[in-house]
Each structure stands twice: as structure tokens, then as C-alpha cells.
Image (tube, rainbow, N blue to C red; front, side):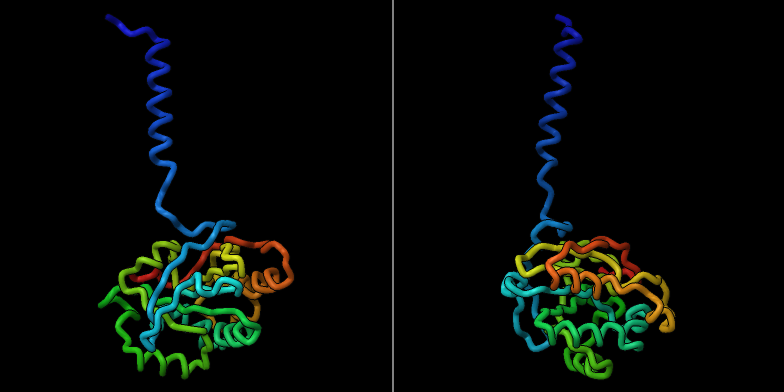
Length: 208
């Protein structure tokens, strides 16, 4: 018995609906305007840090690779260390995250070497976290070093992207650039929406 065109159309629509339902619940990933996915990682002192433990405070996530030329642009110029010092003095939690896999560029520094690196550049993060399996990096779709995220006190992700507007490795470009993270933190502090909430990150690829 042949099926009618009407029956075939209904069947196709039902199949599409069920397929859409099955794919409508992807794994949790960081999304602007949504709660930032929780995670926990260990710092250079062996202490555990869980994102949700910082609820009530603004949090900045900065993906880091100490061997990346673009990272050096922002540390040689004191751009990122200065922003870290200013932000943390204002009560912001600043978490550096290294998602490099073992054996990849910038991933195999010892805790002592990383502490010395941070001291050399007068960096002032709240903690430096290791993510060798890349789980947190993929959760946030971190693409570059640096790649910056700003999370409000209620746990909402409000900024995802570049540190600033000039995509180069030239230190001389730092003072000419618009700093998106500075602007995002100022907006959060003032209770305003972040005007430029998603800006294409630039830098070295995260070495998963």
C-alpha cells in the first residue's frame, strides 16, 4: 500500500522535530549573557580554585602562554600586569589559566619557574591555574593567548574576546589601542551593560 504525500510530509516533520529535540541540549559551554560554566583547577601552590567560590565578586579569566609573543607584548609593556594590579586592588578576582597540553609550547614550566616569570613581570593575578587536559579551555572555547573573559558577581559571562583593539605583536601599539577588558570592567562596576561584549580574540593558538 502506497503512503499518501500528506502522510509522508507529516512523518518527515515529526522526524525533523525529534532530531531537533535530540540536538537541542549541547554540552554546557560559555555563552555571553548566560551563567559562566563552573570549573575547578589547581594553582601553583597546589590549592584548588572553584569558580563558583568567587560568587559575589567580578572575575576575569585570562588564558596564558608564557612563550607566546602576543602575551609578551602585553607583559613587556606592563599592559596586562598593570590591569591586574588595578583590578585586584578593586576587589576583582583575576585567574590566569594555562591550557597547554604536556609537551606543547609554554606548558612545561615548573611552578617555581612560573612564579619567577610572574614576579619578573610584576604580574598580580589572584591565582595561576593549570589546565593540562584542556577541559576548562574547551568549556570556554578559549582560542588564543591571551583570550579574556569577564564574569559578573552574579556569575554571568559578560565579555568574551581580545584584550584590546590592535591585533599585533608590537608593544608600541598598546597605548593606541582600545582596551576592551578595561571598558568591560568599568561597565560592570557602574552597573551598565558591556557595550562590546564579544570581540574576536587574537594571539597564539591555545596549545591543546
